[in-house]
Image (cartoon, rainbow, N blue to C red):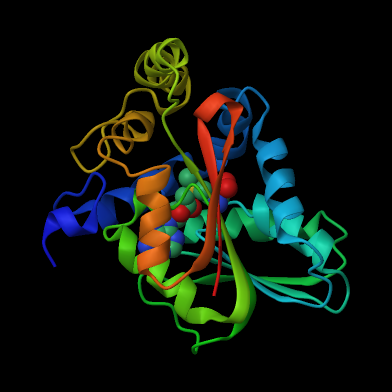
Length: 249
Ligand SMILES: C[S@@+](CC[C@H](N)C(=O)[O-])C[C@H]1O[C@@H](n2cnc3c(N)ncnc32)[C@H](O)[C@@H]1O
């Protein structure tokens, strides 16, 4: 498949770079997420759960689970008969998620597992629900990641995926551009010290450049449709800064 067909910002060595970025930022990832989202990230997760509906007893998968925040939201809703797997490619993020989990009193069991969203170790139809937050910009093949989500869902199962987007409204878009291209790297500098990762850009500069050419809105919804999802919708949150995609297998 050509680089264009993989969509988004792709480059040689991306997988390793992304893993090294997340290894680097794992210890302060949650704090920065709260600051950069202006405290809205938990509301986005809450909205994802609303879209999930009644998931009691469900077998759930959170892809690119990072420090586990979405997996914990899912676990609280899936209840004692439910089970959640959090899958991620970065050992440092998984380790942090496990440490956080030990402090929580979650109703369902959650397992954090090393794995690649592009080639998941699960059989077809293994899950009732797949969630994913802010991972797709980071993968080397966006359509493949969405196809994998579709593959591991059972027929009738739902995927709920949150990702960054770009506001449609001209003024909001102008403000958003400045925020993402100037304010985010500036805030990030306090944490990443501007230190280049793998000789490339600093960790929080990647948050900005990962948005270059990143499909969102209808374009992303089409990727979900092409992967085989039906009833595909996207919900615009925070004036277009984030979209939440929902599709049914
Ligand atoms: C921006 S973080 C999001 C973490 C979490 N979902 C959240 O909402 O905070 C992206 C995560 O995706 C993971 N990731 C990137 N590429 C991946 C891949 N191919 N397979 C699995 N996880 C991946 C990274 O390690 C990182 O933890």
